[in-house]
Each structure stands twice: as structure tokens, then as C-alpha cells.
Amino acid sequence: MLKTVSYSKEPIHTMGGLTVVPDCLIDDIAIKETSVLLLPGADTWSDPKHGAIIKKASELLSLGATVGAICGATVALANFGLLDNQRHTSNGQGFLEMFSPAYKGQDLYVDKPSVADNNLITANPTGALLWAKQIIEHLGVFQANTLEFWYEYFSTGKAESFFALMQTVAPNNEK
Image (cartoon, rainbow, N blue to C red; front, top):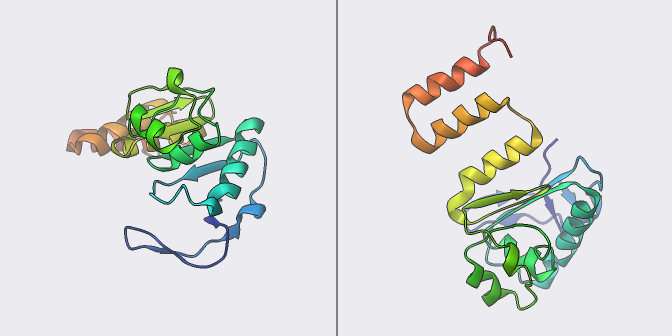
């Protein structure tokens, strides 16, 4: 079940012009190993009001649940020390150092668009599609070949990739 979460039930107006009405409050997040928390990119993560969700992310990671962060959300994780002991990426190592004085994970920084390390999946804004692929893979949504064709299709737009993808999900296809 997918739920949107916030520190209040007030509608959120995104930079992209979307209005999101949260389904639940941060305190309502189930702390269990099967939970998944995805933190979207933004330039507002340094606001103290986001401390509660990052604390929840820390609890989830400690339990083995999955946390994904992209772009500016990686700064919030860095500020809380959550990138200090796991491989990760962001908008550049210098970016994390610039915006997170507490950041100590330089030795584990990987200069790639998206990095999955156990239950932590991080990405820079150019890695959004790969980030989605790694999340889908971690959740076991698709068979390996379906996921590869899905990624190939959405990264290239080639018709043959679409047809290959459809062959892997056809109703009579052996799994």
C-alpha cells in the first residue's frame, strides 16, 4: 500500500506544481522491516521541520527496512549521519560537504547516478530512472529479465525493447 506522509495533513505544493494531500502523519509510519520510505528531492531538506522524517528513516534503516533518497534528500540523510557507514551517491561529493557540515561518509561516496547498498538506495537527479529500477529490484516487483527490459525500454524508448518487455509479462509466458 502506497501512502504519502508529512508532518501535517496540510496540502503540499511541490516545485513541479503538484498538490499532494498527505495520507498520514510521520508518527503513523509503520516501523517494520518490510516498510519502504522514499524521500523526494527538494531544496528544503535543511528545514528543521524535516527532522522527524529523517529520524524515522534512521529507525527504518536500523531495522533493515528500505530507505530511498534522491537529490536534496541525500543532504538530510548526510546531516543525520545516515550516509557515514553505507555506500551512497548524491549530486557530487562536494555537494554533500557544502551543504552538510556533519557529513563523514566521503570514503563511501560513489560517483554514479544511483547507488543501492543493502537497504539504502540513493541517487542524484540524473539517476531517477536507475533509482526507480533499483527500488523495483529491491522490492522484487519484476523477474530479472522483465526488469532489464523495463529499464532498457524506459532508458532508450526503442520499440523492440517494449516488445521484449511485453514478452516477459505476457499471460501465457513461462516464469
